[in-house]
Each structure stands twice: as C-alpha cells, then as structure tokens.
Length: 157
Image (cartoon, rainbow, N blue to C red):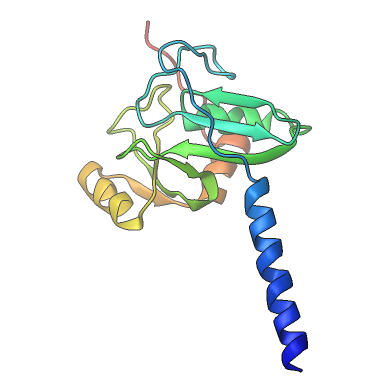
C-alpha cells in the first residue's frame, strides 16, 4: 500500500511540475511603443496593461483590462493559454484568475473602463474604501464587458 501511495505522490508531483513549466510567463511590453490589440492606442506602464498568450504562441497586448476582455469576448476562436494583468498598485504581472478586482471610475484607467486588479485582497479593499469603488468578481467583470452591460468608454478629444 505504501509503494502505491508513493508512486501516486510522485506521479502527481511530476505532473504538477510539468504543467507549471507549460504555462508561459508574462511577456515584456515595450511601453510607449507597442499598441493595444483592441483600440490601437499606445500602451503605457500605468498599472493597467494586460496580455493574452495563446496556445499558438501569439502575444496580444492591451492598454486597459476592459479592452482585453472586449477583445476576448469578440474572438470566440481565440485559444488562450494564459492571461496576465498588471497589479494597479505595484505594476507586477499576475494571472487574471489570481487578481482581486475593484470597479470604480474615481481613478481613471487608460480607456475609462474602471477595472482595477490587485494581487492581494487587502490592497483591493483599501483601494475600494479610498475610492468608493466596489469589489467585483472576475466572472461579473467578464459578464459586464462581454455580455454588453458595460458600455464601451468614450474618449474625450
């Protein structure tokens, strides 16, 4: 019985290591030079950049998390490997599913969507309290942008 358990533990451990190696890391964005795949605006290092890495090794870069979700919703054939977003406080990259979300328009995002990602719940709650924002789940965020309940922000000229 012990040998079966050891084999099972070894198999799970190797499988976990191999799976982790298959997930590509966030790709460097040349801030101030590269443009958003959705709107064509130049991407700045504002803490709101994001990117989709596809299974066929394409990297799609965005200036605003809302633009990424709008693009993803309009491309049902997109084969996503991983999605990264910037932490609004630290500008560090994190996987979209690991982020804690706040919706507020009190702090502007590049395209005006108002979605802010944080790597910790405490940072998200502090930001929400300071800005009068609301915590939002990733599923609700996606439904809002891709389901059409969030309107596409209008740029002021």
